[in-house]
Image (tube, rainbow, N blue to C red; front, side, top):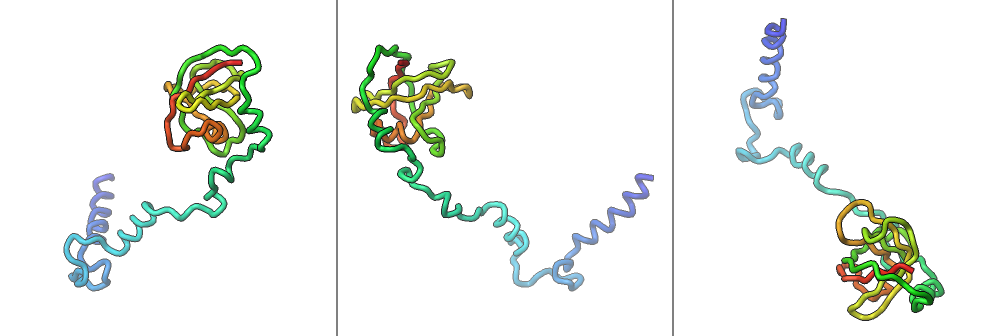
Length: 166
């Protein structure tokens, strides 16, 4: 049964590949397309896959637009430590999700949420932050947009940061 089906389907499939099936004229190939050139249909299909529309205007936010902390919050986060802190270690920080507001760091240096401070030893600036465990592995940390700006770090840098628990 399968041989009979194959014998009936195979000629039909091969006939669809015959020259002239795209032009409608049997036995002729398109004169305008050089051999091996992609057809307009193939170009359109590839373009649909490889190009994406521009982001929505609302998605093109600047760092200032994404930083929703108030001046009072930034001043409070920049205050020096009022109590004894425990140094947890040093980590390389990168910008975390910029749409998550507040002062926080996701780091493998903690196993539970706590309050703490991060210090940029390059300029001495510090920020009080919420320490959040980073469970995805790795040795680096993700830092909030607000904290990166308070530390005076360009958002594309990977600074070494000292991490303290309050």
